[in-house]
Structures are given as structure tokens and as C-alpha cells.
Amino acid sequence: MSHSAIYFLVAAIISFPLILWKVHSWVILHHQRQMLKKEHGCKEPSSYHNKDPIFGLDAVWRNYVGWKTNSLLPELTSRYQKYGNTYSLRMGGSRSLSTIEPENLKSILSTNFTSYSFGSKRNNALEPFLGASIFTLSGSDWQHSRAMIRPNLVKDQFVDAEMSTFEKHFGRLLSAIPRDGSEIDLQPLFFAFTLNTSIELLTGQDVHLDHEVSQMFDDAERLIGDQFLLSFIPFRRSRRQYLKACKLCHAWVDRYVLEAIKEHHSQTWKTFTEEDKASGEGKYSLLSELVKETYDVPRIRGELIGMLTAGRETTASALSSLWFTFAKRPDIVQRLRAEVAELGGEKPTFAQLKRMRYLQNTIQEALRLYPPLPANMRTAVEDTILPTGGGPDGISPIFVQKGQLIFYNIFAMHRRQDIYGVDAEIFRPERWEDTSLRPGWGYLPFNGGPRICLGQQFALTEIAYTTVRLLQEFQVMDSRDGSPWQEKWHINCAVKSGCRVSLS
Ligand code: HEM
Ligand SMILES: *[C@@H]1O[C@H](CO)[C@@H](O)[C@H](O)[C@H]1NC(C)=O
Ligand SMILES: *[C@@H]1O[C@H](CO)[C@@H](O)[C@H](O)[C@H]1NC(C)=O
Image (cartoon, rainbow, N blue to C red):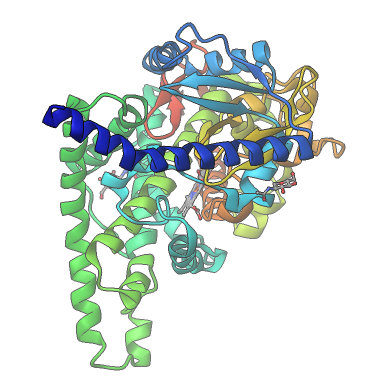
């Protein structure tokens, strides 16, 4: 016998028990899964007709084209109409699930929360930008982040009697809008406005931002989409561009982090006097609170960038969709003006905003039809069960295998006629006056369960305040753009054609 044959024989003898053991555990696992399926009466959901049944590259390609041509959301919505509210599809090699069933979302986000995490795909896209922070962490690290951030976003931290922070930044927004009725695109102004407000909320300082800085953040955020959709292409150019953009943003944020650490370090040697507090020294902000917890620069930076990203694009997008709608719907604006007139020209307080029913319904309706975070996903971290969507009638439970991706689509769910009625596609704030409309987990612009948005109060207040103040300042508005609402992707979704109007 030759040497190589002996080696082969020995290798086979050694590895045989290993292979046997592998097969054995696979059989056991398979058996356990069959038992679980049987016990819960699980059935297969309907399945998307993949042209490429092995790698599912057709689905990846169609999503990519939809995304590049600003038509991904209608495309995804039509898939649910074709395949049902829950279906499976092959995308990039593995079989994923896709659902817009409120009961399933409740299970994923709340009752079976611990069975799911963000998964490596999402983190691979977000981590270079956000590092280890609330948007990428899970388990006890995430809980710790959430506990640090939460106190900064309670009402009393951003609302005072005069709504002074909002009013200050609103004044700057106002001075950027021409009063002579010439055309203006409000969308970029809303983005700058929410960036300015968020930075003050996070750092406690009125930071001067030049155009270059906001451009830097725009670049990084815009490139994140590519990281999601093209993650299967190694060494791609957009990855290098993305990493470069992240580095620039990090360097800018680090300046403030280091400053805050230095200040905190020197202050730990002295105790605050009442004058210090009155003069605003040691002002409460997310940054000053984080520095008390840790001097870990990348960690603090990650939380700050995460909050900035979460807080600004979403809110700016909601404001843009809202005003995009106003420009085309004088009937809504007229009803709103009547409500705003009750303030008698005074600036609104927090309590007054909350009491303005039509205003609140209008904002709620904008977040229904144009949710800033329209699509999302989770990964199962263990074998688990979805309560519904399986079988020919789509009501049996579905078995979910460890590692499986589940996509969910708020945009499509918010358009379900069986939840919102036959006019589900129409912008109609009055629908919320009907107390029999109780969508529950069928209405999720801010997510739900333990990871529900922490900035909801802040965002709703900022949107309501800005809207009322703009209506008070301008009596006439005309649309300068006849196109329908179309998506434009950054991390979130904004309006493709912007919000072009004339105001006087
Ligand atoms: C209209 C505006 C907003 C919308 C539609 C929105 C929506 C959402 C959604 C859907 C999530 C869940 C993401 C996920 O788990 O996959 C989320 C999480 C979060 N949002 Fe918002 N958000 C808005 C504004 C804000 C603002 C202004 C802030 C902060 C100033 C903020 C802070 C956060 C934070 C910290 C989380 C993470 C919570 C966690 O994972 O524990 N959001 N938001
Ligand atoms: C945002 O702040 C910068 C100064 O930091 C200012 O130049 C700009 O006009 C502000 N933009 C808006 C829309 O408030
Ligand atoms: C998930 O929820 C279902 C009920 O919908 C329950 O029967 C099941 O045991 C849960 N699975 C896990 C892994 O917690």
C-alpha cells in the first residue's frame, strides 16, 4: 500500500465516529423539530416563486432594482397581495419568512422577544457606523444602554414652559424660508432642523454645524443601504466609501466626547455650587450622563451617533411626508388652521399640543401611510413558533428554525384593507376619530415591545410644535410639485421629490 492510501485509511477510521456523531445529532435535531411542529400544529406558509431556487439571487436582484428605482415599497406590498400576509422566500441562499400579520409581530417583538435578535446581517451593516451601542447590542449590554439613554428622553428633559429649545431652532428654520412666495424645498430644511435640535438634545450645547458636517453624516447614512443589500459581494467599493465616511463622522464626534470627558474629569474634583447649576454648568444632556458612566470613547461615540441617526432622519422624514401631504390637501390644512386658531396666536405649550385632536390624528395618519422606518427584520436565535400564517388558509402556526431571517413590513401592514377599511390607501385623519378603529399591533410606526422607540414623545412633540408654528407663520401655501409620494432611501425613508412649496 502506498503512503497516501494509508493516510487516507487512517483519516477515514478517525473521522468515521465524528461523521456518525454528526449524522446522529442531525437526526435527533430533525426529530425534535418534527415533534415541535406536530405539537404546535405547524404548517408551511405559501412561498414566493423564486426563479433561482438555490441562492434566491432573483429576489436579491429585484429588491436591489426596486431600491435603486425608488419603488421597493410598492413592490414588497404587491408581494403580500399576491402570496398572502405571511410567505417564505429564498434570498441570498437561505429561506426567510416575510410577514405583515399583527399577531406575528406581537410574538416577534414582544411575547417571544427573547427568541429573536437583530442578526449578523444587520449588525454587519450598522456596526462600522454605530459601534457597540443601543442599535447593535442585545441581551444585558443592550439593557444597560437602554437604561442609560432612557432618562434623557423623558418629557421633562426636552420640554420647558416656553418650549424654548424647539422655538430657538424653529426660529432658524423660519429664517431659511422665503416669505415672498418663491419656491422652497422644505425637506432639506427639515433635515437640517432636526439635526440641529438633536445635537442640542444630545450634547446640551448649541453646536455650530457647517454644511460639510451634515454632508458627512448624510454620506455615511446613505451608504448604509448598500451594506444591507450588497452584503454578499466582498471587497465592494461602497464598503470602502462607507468605512471612510464613518471615520470622518467618528473624528468629528470624538472631539465633543473628549471635551466632555476632560470637563467631567476636572469637575469630579469639585462639588457643584448652586451658582454653577443656575449658570447652566453641568447641564443635563445625554453626553454628560454617559461620561459619568464610562470614559470609553468608542462606546460613548456609538451611542451619540446612534441617537443622532435615530432622532433626526426619522423625524425629518415624518415632517416631510406630512407637509408633502398638506401641500396637496388644502381641506386638511383648513381643518388644522381652525384648530390652531384656538390658540389665539399664542405659541403652543406641550399640554395644548396634546389636546389638539385633529393635529394628533393627522400626524398619526402620516406615520401610518408613510412610516419613516417602513421595513425591518429580525433573526431567530433559537427554534421557535410564529402563531399564524401557515397552511392553505394561512392561519396555522409556523415553525421558525434557529438562524432564520424574518422580514416585516410596516408600510404594507399599514395599508391592509381588513384593518383600515377599503380606503386604507387614502390619507384621511378622520379615520382615527372612529373609536372602533383599534389596530393594536397592526399600527407600529415606533415598533413595540421591549425595544419600542425611546424617542417617540420627543419626535411627536417636535413634529407637532413645528407644524403648528409653521401654520401660524404662513397663511398661504401652494404646492410646486405634482408628483405622487415616492420613497427615497437613506437609512430610513423620505420623500423622493422632496417637499416643494411656496409659502407666504
Ligand atoms: C417619527 C420619528 C421616529 C420614528 C418613526 C422612530 C421609529 C423607531 C423604530 C421603528 C424603532 C425600532 C427599531 C428596531 O428595533 O428595529 C426605534 C428605536 C429607537 N428610537 Fe426611534 N423613531 C423616531 C424618532 C426617534 C427620536 C427623535 C429618538 C431620539 C431622540 C429616537 C430614539 C430611538 C432609540 C434610542 C431606539 C432604540 C430602542 C432600543 O433598541 O431599545 N427615535 N425608533
Ligand atoms: C442649523 O444650524 C446651523 C448653525 O449651526 C445654521 O446655519 C442653520 O441655518 C440651521 N438650519 C436650520 C434649518 O435650522
Ligand atoms: C412562542 O410563542 C408561542 C405562542 O405563540 C408559544 O407556544 C411558544 O412556546 C413560544 N416559543 C418560545 C421558544 O418561547
